[in-house]
Amino acid sequence: MAVVGIDSSTQSCKVLTVDDDTGRVLRAGQAPHPDGTEVDPEAWWRALADAGGTAGGAAAIGVGAQQHGMVALDDADRPVRPALLWNDVRSAPQAEALTEKYGADGWAASVGLVPVASYTVTKLAWLAEHEPAHAARVARVLLPHDWLTWRLRGGRGEPTTDRSDASGTGYFSAATGDYRHDLLTAALGHDAALPTVLAPAAVAGETADGALLAAGAGDNAAAALGLGLSPGQAVVSIGTSGAVFALAGSPVTDPTGAVASFADATGRFLPLSCTLNASRVLAATARMLGTDLAGLDALATSAAPDAGGLTLLPYLDGERTPNLPDATGSLLGLTRAAMTPENLARASVLGVLCGLADALDELRAHGAAIDTVLLIGGGSRSAAIRVAAPDVFGVPVLVPEPAEYVALGAARQAAWALSGAAEPPAWPRPDATRYEPAGAGWPAELRARYRAARHRLHER
Figure 1 (cartoon, helix red, strand yellow):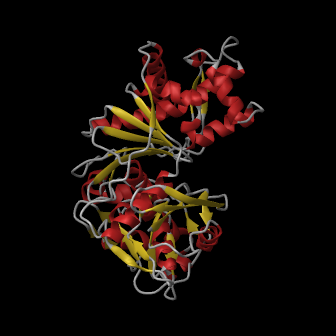
Figure 2 (spheres, rainbow, N blue to C red):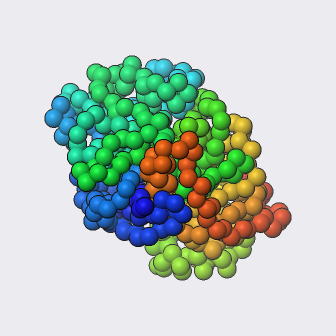
């Protein structure tokens, strides 16, 4: 039978039709989302239809989607305003105020994270402060994957979510499985209805033509399921954002906020560290150099390994890890000899990788034993990224064959719900190319330079 996996990401909607027994992709579709940090949820629905996600004929459907997005509905279940996305940083002051009110230790212990502008709870606080008339109308709060799953059900019954996505809101504890309505109320000014949290293999309902709907998942949890992530491995995803995550059997408590204790899509935990700046840094550098991504890759590959001493702090859109929502990018180490297109291209690659290497170190500091990195996302297609990553990360890097792993994970979850089995179906792991560290000395010098620059400019 065929199952469908959906990835409703920041930039587009991807739909895969997959054989439920073998995991073989039968068909694929894609449609773009509007640019920006706030979006009318109906745009997601139109893209889902354009990508083939509502075409029918599947036995089961799973939805994976970008996390944290605030879909605020009134008492008629209509959006009170466009959804605020994870990469909208206007709620940074509210994040700071919420952290001060309850303390970083209190947040980490109660819901596994410390508020930053990405999280839903801070966006609700922004809404209450800046758009009180809209806030007063909010009767229900959903996340993007919750809203799409509910729409696939025809808007019937109570909306649902799953542990992985709920764990990124700031008002759900993955450790206890409970919502913290007191924290939601503190942010929004009043309580609101929240979706029922389903177990990983649970059924969320059916579409009008009888297709079973899986619980769904946040994008990173779905990617982990699609990759068949194992203990000892970490995923580094270089997409619109940079995400670093690994499996854990128990929740993590990090009062610094660098690591969030999210849930995965199998009943375990997925400690995660995230950066706002990833592949778009490469795109911006290419544009600055008057070339495209292929041209940037060629320049970076031909540069000095350490970019001739150039150091880029790539905080072009502010930053989430470290928590610097108002930061801008900085280029240091400028000399006449170093200022070449090749070195600047290489510095953009290394700046992105250094930020992700810091995130890997944070996971290690909180108990993750990482001996291999799985490198995915659009940035993994860069030859310069692939070759430099093992040296910067200090471990072998596996680059799986390019695929839509979030959509594949959502399809695997759909097949799991369809089967009623205790474990997800044992689909083959993707083929991967292995890259080893070269053992050179420049990566240690580079990372020391990067840390020194970050500390000097941002005291982090």
